[in-house]
Image (cartoon, rainbow, N blue to C red; front, side, top):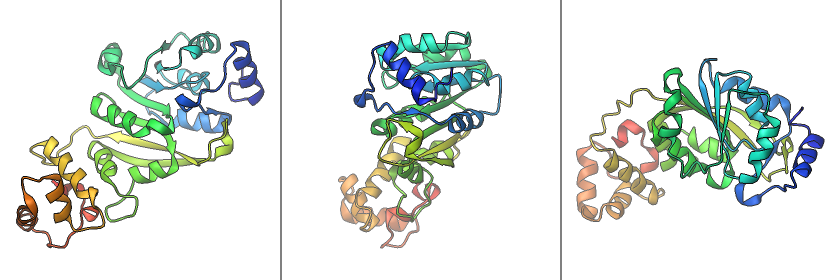
Length: 274
């Protein structure tokens, strides 16, 4: 069964009386080469477990199951669970869980699979990409996270300091992982077609985060404050994000760190934020 074939997708959906649910950001892949490339690149170890988020009707799930030891797929749409049991019936190494990744206890779900290493592979809904990536990186139990997202989001995650795409979310992602954009995916590769181009990005999770931040909560608060007024001087953002400092205190902190008084937060790298 070719689960990327448009005719097959329509037949399967009709068989189970289902429609695409916009509230879940459902856009199913219709290009076999794209699905195979994602599966090939998501992990280098055949004995790994893959956590998949939003399997849809199972097109990517099938390819992952043929390449890796275990696949654990979280699907929020209960209507797709019988579909997945039908399309993936031949694969005994796939476990389908009807759960919202944002509410799931990932460490508990994945505890039985830790020995072989775990990576993430997913075609993420555009509307909730950032919260899901945040949850995945903070879970701190993955070797890599390979996801398809809106191209602009991928560019933001992989951006360099001082560039237009560089943001607080960039710093967050790169604090936890090393990102690499693998390839673009045109809108024509989906059903229904989104109005944007997508991209597959891989984040190799850092085994050690020796950045030197003594307090991560203060570090991320600093980053967030620094980008709140990205076109203004860093002192303005820090004074706003840390009202206990005030403008004078913010200026003193910047001077003590060895930066120019007119520096902007959007130009600082992670070590400089530290």
